[in-house]
Length: 630
Image 1 (spheres, helix red, strand yellow):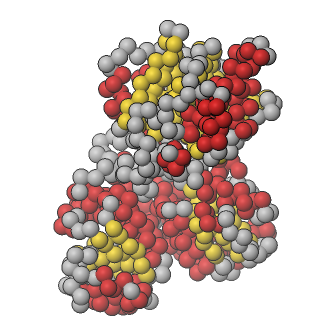
Image 2 (tube, rainbow, N blue to C red):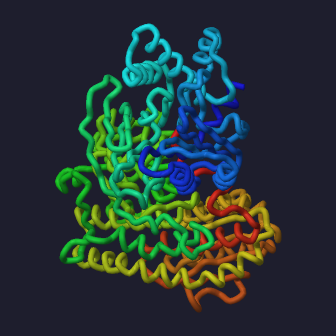
Image 3 (tube, rainbow, N blue to C red):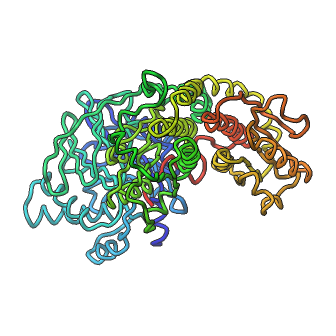
């Protein structure tokens, strides 16, 4: 039972709270719909109406909850809601959020994990507190409710003072992470929120305010947002809000502005967010470059690094940290920076780095890469590096994210919101920024003016090249139909195309549930070649260059063993006829553009295979967009 409850909160969930001015139910449901990429095994809504909580919870998608609300007189101008994801078990109406405390005084939605919940639960049960779910979240809620009741009875405190004191007292006892929003029957005009390790933001509207785990929840209703930091508590009414620390010290808030429009977070005419975001990549790359080249077009420039060129020239080594797709972007950065800037680069999984005592040179610069800026492993790895005195820069897509606020400087991707769980435009943008960083560091050291201009010119051509690759979509859709029935795939690439092979295999696994592996092409002979058969297609990258002939030889080894081959190449007529079963031709370009360019057919192939297999592309099983707890 303990293990089950722990697993119920392993992956990020979506939280939305709304208060005042309008009927809350449709606004909360719309917010949940926008946040459903964060978790979609159950959803719930709790409104304050007629001096009582009205709560509805349903397993399955948010649409199930919406249909259920139509059957009930479910109304009110204040409420909280939640869309949840569980990795194993615990998918039930009882375990869905929001929860109601055992005394019916408090309601709460929670994103995070309370590690010592079992001990607290036993202590509360011994005091007569009852539970209706298996979750650690209800344990936290009942602890707050127990302390709140004690404050009211023993200290005769007013409801607002008592609740905030109980909240702080409970949070000081728990171990783990949380982003919580809660309401109280004694304070119907307030929503209380607190965070540690899980994101929470305030949406500041016109006589209406929000508390949510992501600005996407209220985009379209307000562009004004306040990002809470760890250890902060927010008290929100319909017309105002206050932020304090855990020690009850008032915080003067900074109100930021959302830079994108609500249309950016909608599917429009596309059948899936993933396809929309694949086709947004020319613009995503364009946005990543805007204003980031020198006036003489010989180098890149970055205004947010917060580190002087003189200091950067003293750097002896760079360490990149990331998880999942972002880790693949780190590998791309390693290849490019080592080749052009001649700086040694190491890449580590962020989840492993924080638990290793890895020796680093004192002149090491650390980069973290995270699309959301909230990935808990990457955030904690960043904090660990900073704790040891290293300068940490970030590459992230979300302005105001925790990683962006806590690092020492960095680069915003400006890709716009990415809703599809499988990253596409964010990855290509990260790869392009990595190429720009390689130019920046190289020109700072020994790259010539002429070579710098050549690479800058090539980088600026990337959006047009990606558009050409996207024009192959119909051809790739036909290839997908032909191979969608296979249950095993191999992806092969050499040098910088090895991380792209890894990323291609990951995309196929994520959204079509096909077993896929990525390998360096030359490693085939060291084991993986045993998998080759007519039932295991290979996606092989063979680009022109010094190892082009070796890549062709690797393909020939596969064909000799009757393995189907889908080749991705820029070789045109130089690619031998009949060497591959399918050939996807890409435009020839400088190698600094290879990573995002070759990613396009990989992404499209995965997408169309998943569609052919009738998979839920935007909401693949067992996954959510970002992991905010371990």
